[in-house]
Image (cartoon, rainbow, N blue to C red):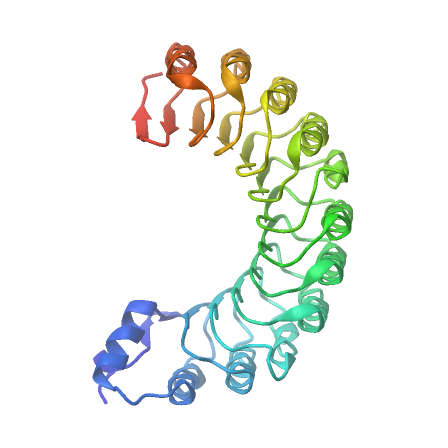
Length: 362
């Protein structure tokens, strides 16, 4: 088998196993099993143990726990790694064991980790093993972790973020925890734990399609993130309602240092009052220069739209705006009035709505 037909390509000190190349490989070798695929990658890795950056994409390759363990163990024998991107989404992990995480602490030079374990069965037990090993990566500054659809529940959310907060060096954190049976308690524990990460500057959390209601002020800890500059918060399909939106708005208004805010509260039964509360938060976040707001399939009405336009117009530092109001009961007149206000903001560099981007002059 020549190099052009294998699943692995080498580029200087970077080893990449990309989806496209894997598909090409499987076309050439129809009977290639997941075990053989992992074995081929391991063979290549053993020849390149001085790697500094490694990206492996094994999306939907029927990888099971034993092969994942062999792969991670081999990766851990590359002591110079500083950047690791490993995509194991939509495989068969967690059904037998979750021991393949235990080799991660050997990578003490790692400062950027992107680990995608979405749509497996990590579960509460697996999260405990994963989080305890992630906490031992003391030089880690940027962590992107996808655990969507893994049934980790409240306890899993708490354990995960308590260990992450123990790592005092993380500055950039991206967590995808959507569709995980997380309730109010788990969501509140998550934010309370992360508030201990004093160096956190950029935070992205996807809690969409969990069982979170508006009865709990689960984001109350947001006021305790002193250095937070960028926040991407996805709460789509959580049914937080008017009360939850009010709590959220009050907490966001205390994030005085935010320059970049992305908020997705679509499919949440919010109404005009919710938008009025959000307007107040936006007015208090005076340093914002980039705003993305999604409230699709809500009932914000004409009054809510009008007030939102005024709040955005009054934000003197905003230069990038992305909105998505699909399925809202606001009427075409309110929509046009909102856009007229936006277009009068000469400082905007970019305005984007659901119909596509509109580039505006300074």
